Length: 319
Ligand code: NCD
Image 1 (cartoon, rainbow, N blue to C red):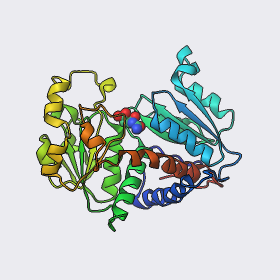
Image 2: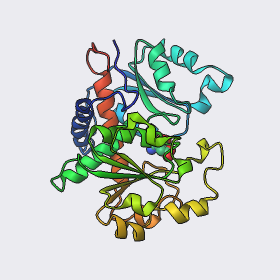
Image 3: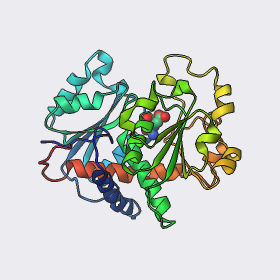
């Protein structure tokens, strides 16, 4: 039976740490002069990106190549999806060419689970499905936190994490909430009511350590980590905020506010950043920012995921 990575929600803590431990050794490979190991020689990985992407797509391709796999990329605009082919037909045709893994990004929530249900012979890796999950982003975020806090002789449990911005439309937020729930961290969700999922207080899967804040100052108070999210204008079907100016006036994360309410915090952002809307350039480029480290770690985490799911004989289905 094939294993997949569809979301963080299905992982347990041991599996999360396994990915992070594996990623650590792949960080070392990426720091070498010759950044290549033969681990996945003879394996084929298809990156099926039916929604736009810069970081995720490039890092999956680099990750596959550094593991010596044969990687091919298919994007929305150059695939037969533009001729009306369904996702399932596209994926079945790709499976007929015997890839070991299909990495999929799609604008519909549930697209990766759907493929995992219908394709039996290859691993499905979710590279972001609609507003559902983006598991490799949460893993690279955890790896970046682990490195940062290890340098200060600390772990990544028992932290206060503030997630600020368009949480309603963010798969990155959902995957991180599930990851920090496993790590027993306190999670502050900070956004205007319209940018939070409906009835957020009663979402049981998020666990008991999630607190909701509509005030940026209150939500940031004492945070160790501030995770800023992009305003997902492409997913907004309504006017969720009166104007971007007003959003910015109330929720833009600036150095002035951080130094007052979360003076020791570090700042993360999955990219792409809308500078001056959700995050000031001063913070994005300043000493609190670990944003570039996140991007660097994207490669090692994706190497760990590809290696875990494609190397050797797979006998056990992921829980
Ligand atoms: C995120 C995504 O596509 O979900 N970007 C990424 O993968 N680094 C976040 C976003 O688009 O805002």
